[in-house]
Amino acid sequence: MHIKLRTFIQFLLIGIMLTAPYAQEKAAKAPAPYTWGTELLFKRGGNAVAYADAGWRFEKGMAWTVARDESNKSVLTLPVQKVARDVKLTLKVGGAYGSQRLLLSANGDHIGKWWVFSRSQIITVTLPAKALMKGTPLRLTFHTPDAKSPEEATGGASNDSDQLGVSVLSLKLE
Image 1 (cartoon, rainbow, N blue to C red):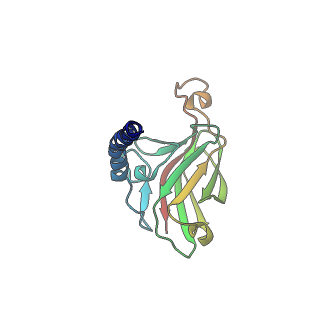
Image 2: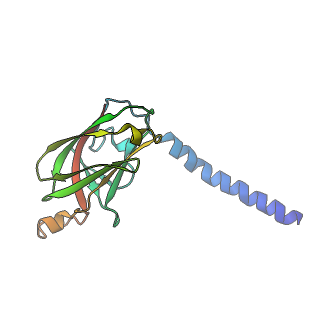
């Protein structure tokens, strides 16, 4: 019995030593809290990169929502201070391949649905206080059910097979 307990403790300590560097790395990469009114820039090296979870592809001047699975969702997680008021969200999109639907939710509450076309658009919507009072972080989910690959959209002229939704340029909450 004593040997089994000693082996278990050694196994446990090895597990802690192996996971500790990962936990420290993850904590070191935790994004700073979002400051209300800050414009997030969606591009390679932009400040939105720190808040991007699943489903984003950052390029030189923009980021695409990318369908990595059948859910076609891209998630942005913002550590925010709770507010007891509605918040205005301004989203600048750079377009899409053809026309695509964009459905937005905040902490699981449906916020709105828009058609995004091949040109730039500015979308303004109010996030209700009840969605923001659900706690921090604020999880914005971009659902693009019509995502398609550049290969599909160009009839094979491109060999890019990523399922792209809409291109996002910036986002601001105020």
